[in-house]
Length: 368
Image (cartoon, rainbow, N blue to C red; front, side):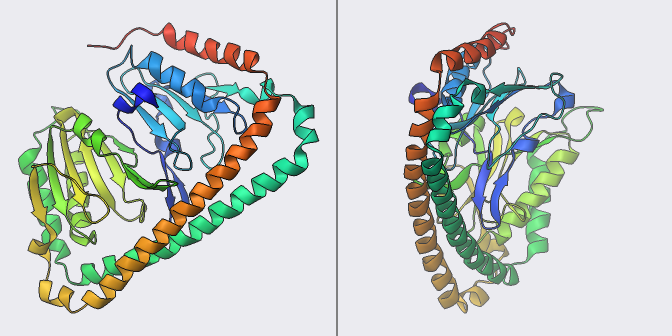
């Protein structure tokens, strides 16, 4: 993504054990003045290209722009968000379907499907259907691998939780947050929570946007915990304390248990982050580290070492297999794109995209 790599990155979805989990629906609040462009169209119709052009334009107007790569194809974009301007452009197609909730008032549809030659696509319908089914089957197989890996990792989490004083970890987290977080301001009310992913399973394996941490946070509190039991309890306490104190937070769920626990919490206004470190998510910073062992019965955990070791190794193999299947699915998706590229009128696509960019160009600059 050339110089777009210099922008912060978050996934807005995850290939999770229970299937694809989307945070797209919670990525913006229409009542808070957001302007959102939802792109519709098939593979290869120019959605990611338009978003990359939008990212180039928006970063000239806003210091707080981040991009969201696609978990199925990290070389493409799923969304671009300008946080100060409250402008977002996103891919509204499966698996993260987004429909306008307040058409015109908050969201605008950008229908690139209106730029294709339907007759050409119909002529290739059998090949398109075959490739689409193969792509879906590969994703489903990858999903089963991720589900199996998630089951093993969840088993390890439960074992660790049985050996962890979770109440002590929660008390520690609340006390730590109270010490590090000043009051956000009089009468501000509770803070707001935004959900994004800092890591996820992709065709390139597990991707972790460590550079984003450095862009958002001058200070980190690193929670070293291979199993997530202690860190999960600490982070949930930090989350509640921060929101009660009036701080807006970015909550980053664990992609292997997105409904159950967090991996990271970022508080951009303070340049402060609370992050989990484990065998999958390594950090090479010299920030303060808190080790899970201070809350853990290590002797009890060692008695379960054989099972924990098996779970870890098997999960690693399954996740590698899932990444390989996702890479196969991407290759099939690339074949599918060729049918759509051949059927597109890219002069119309560019003209439609330029109208979107012109609207963004008219926005006032939010640069400090």
